[in-house]
Amino acid sequence: MKKIALGFVLLAWGLMPTPLLAAERQDLLDIASGAVVLTTTSEYNAEWAALLLLDGTPDTGWCSAENQAYPNTIMMELARQFQVTEFVIDNTNTQESNYPGISARKFELYASTTSHAEGFALVCSGEAAKGERKVFALDKPAKAQWLKLVVLSNWGDPAYTEIMELEAYGETVGAAPQKRSISGVYDTNYHLMRLEQDGSTIEGCYDWENGTLSGTTDGRVI
Image (cartoon, rainbow, N blue to C red):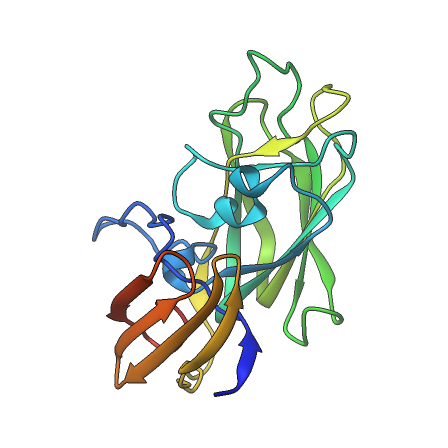
């Protein structure tokens, strides 16, 4: 079977997000919504990975690598095109008590509907709150499938910058993307993993302590 790079998010590694209540709006920058982190210029380690910015809780988050506090760029892909109207940086639970000024401060947000590599336009900029959550309303709705966050400064820590969660809100644009099969063999940080898809049902195994998994998929998220 063909070996390919892991190109979607698995909710089998203990990264289950906090479920949204029915009355709450859908957070577009959430693993459960199909959002993924494509690249980041730095992260401290796997326990402070940029992916944790999309896990639905400010209890875990991203930290820059040591002495790379800023600037840092985080590239994200949404499940489909949206008209984004609001963007949120949540600095709740950053380690301000031990590292004063570690919360992200000035930032720029860029959006593209072309690809992760081109077509970006600045859609929002501002100053995140120290140790708190802050909502930024865009001046006008921005059509986006890729979002690029550039962290330009923090509140004073010389070595590190942290953010605990990112959120985005808006409306869908156009038809839903075509669903695709995700059967195959994937290279992961838990060694090789094989997945078999039957309709929306997924079963698999991986080369780490005889691991197995089962679940369902919408073609993008397991």
